Structures are given as structure tokens and as C-alpha cells.
Length: 433
Image (tube, rainbow, N blue to C red; front, side, top):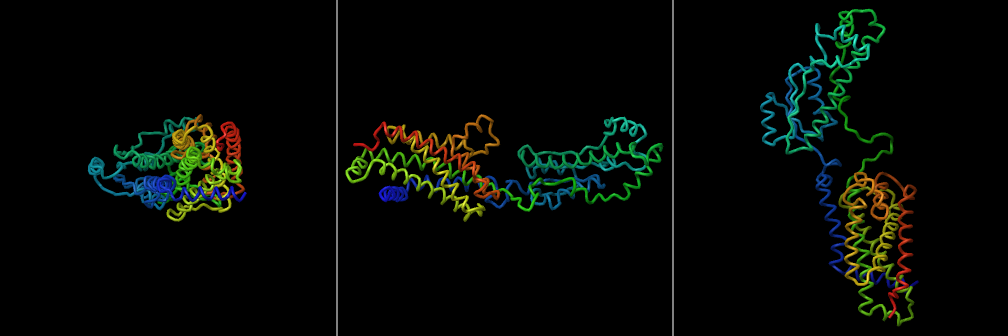
């Protein structure tokens, strides 16, 4: 056992003295994580969505309750970090600002918008509308409402899409209230047998006491997970950082396998057998060296994400167990590549191909939830997919108890691959003279 450990530590030391290897093992994944953090807005200060301060121009020609409510919604606490609203009085000026690429969209609230939704005296729903509502036909309720105009900037499709979604949500809530209100007129007992004029007088009292200042807080809400005391906001870097670490882990394990074949070609392994060291100890020591290198690599990158980016990983025991299991599964693939490769060059080529393939299939670049079903099915053969599943669980507040499935799958993956590799190694007499 002592010889096995000494061989493993020797290989670990050699790799960490290789500047080229360290560049691919540590610097490359760290820089990729940093770059993705800037792209998504996480590193630049935005707290997760990658969208903030979307410039929008508001033109409120209505100056009524609903028009003011929509303007207030864009300036509400819920949207203060998402949108940056500017009010102007001229629709043409608003459109010109969009044409000059100074905002994502212009929202033009026309004169009479509130009046079309909440009619004044003499324009309240007629008896025909009430009768139709009683019969279940609400199409007549959708009278010639004045439409809000959204003038979108084609150069900012994401921002303009967000603005449109906010306005659509506002309008849908207003329309829902309008239709349900008219429908309930004929159904309510207090309105039975009364004329349209009498119903108008009754409902007018309701509108007179309505507080439209609260409309924006009930109509526009950002959907976030705030249910329960243990709800946790997910940090995008908690996905990107381990994604890059796991992808480059495949480089590390293939690099270790390549070194085994290189030492056989150089005669180092046969010389080791001259000493009182068995082939099992030699091969076991080399595998241990690959495993320790992988653990060191992933651990350094995970700690760096916590120190430099402030990622919260939660349960340290669960993190240690997950890293060990992920490296064990990846090491199994590294040994399998070594077993089927005849030269260091072949191992290098196969390892590079698997690194990129597993990075794509395992979700290192894009969440598996966005992948087709057949990709998600294939991803189970990659240590990346199982490892990322575990890291997301930890980032969302999970503990070792919640990591049974990914850790179990990674250990099983490593055992199966080590079994195949041992059989192939035995046939090829890897460490024999």
C-alpha cells in the first residue's frame, strides 16, 4: 500500500510541475467560467437573470387610472432593477428614440385607454352586454378598447420582448377583471330584475371607491421562488463553474492515461518491475495519481468559485463526497481510454474528443433541460451530467443525504469502467517488459 501511495503522489507532483498541463487543468476552465459570468451578467453585478436596466420609453397620453397604473408598474419596486423607464409626452419623440437605438421599446398609452376599460356615465355596459354575459357569451364584452402600442427595437429583441411581456401581463389582468365583472352583473342577486341604468348606478358606487394605485403591484410580478423559509435563489455560476471543471476533468484523466503509455514506451514501467513492486501496485499507483490529480483540480476550481465569485456551496461533507465520486467516474473513463489506446497520441485524440463530447452531452455548455429527449438519455453515460446534478443540488441547499443518486451513479460508472479496463490491461500486458 505504501508503494502504491508513493507512486500516486509522485505522479501528482509531476503533473503540478507541468505548466502546460496546469494551463488546461486550472487556468482554461477558470477563464471560461469568468467569461460566461460576464456574458450572463453574474460577474458584472446582476444577480442572476443577465438582464437589468432595460431602457424603455413611456408615453402616457391617457392620464387616467389605468394609464397611470401601468406607468407606476414600470417604476415599481418589483421592476426597478429590470427596467429603466423614461417618460416623454410626444409619441413621435418616443419612436425616434427607438429608431436611434437609445431604448429597447416604447410603450405608448393612447388617450381614452382607461375610458375604454372603465366607462364613464352613459357608456356603461348595456343590457345587451349583460344578457350576453348571462348566456355565457363574453365576446361582446370585448368592445372597441383603445389599444396600447409597443414600438420595439429590432436590435434589442430580448429587452423588447421583456417589455412586451410586462405589458401583456398588465393587459391580461385588466381584461380578466373587466370580463369577469360584466359577467357577474347578471348573475349577482342584487342585480336581478334591474335595468341597465339601475345596474350602472349600483356598480358606479363600486368604481368610485376603487383604489387603482394598487393595480401595478397586483398586475405585475416577477416570478421567483419565495415559498417557504428554505427557498434559495439559484446562482448561475453554481452551474457554470462545475460545468467547466467537469469538462476539463476529462482532459486531466486522459493526460494521466497518456503518461502511463509514455512511461511504458520510455522503459520506466519495466524498470519499476525490477524492484520488489508488483504490476498491480504499479498500475494502482498510476491510477491513484490520476485520481488525486482530478480531486485537486476540481477542488481548486470549486474553492476558487467560492472565493472569487462568492458561490455558496453549502454542505462541505456533501461537496467532498460529490467531488470524489465525480473524479472516480471520470478516472474510470480515463483508464478505459488508456486500455483501448495503443499509443499516447491515440489516447490524446480520444481523450480530447470525449472531453468535448461529454461537455456537450453532459450539459457543461447548456442545461440538459433545454436539450432534446434523446440527448438527455445519452447524457447518463457522462460523469458531467451526474456531477452537475449533484452540484446544483448543493447550490440549492441540498446536503449529502440528497446526493444519493448522482454519487451512486458515478461510483457505479467508475466500477464498471475499471472492470473493463482491468480485463483489457490483462490481455495487453501493459506493464510487462
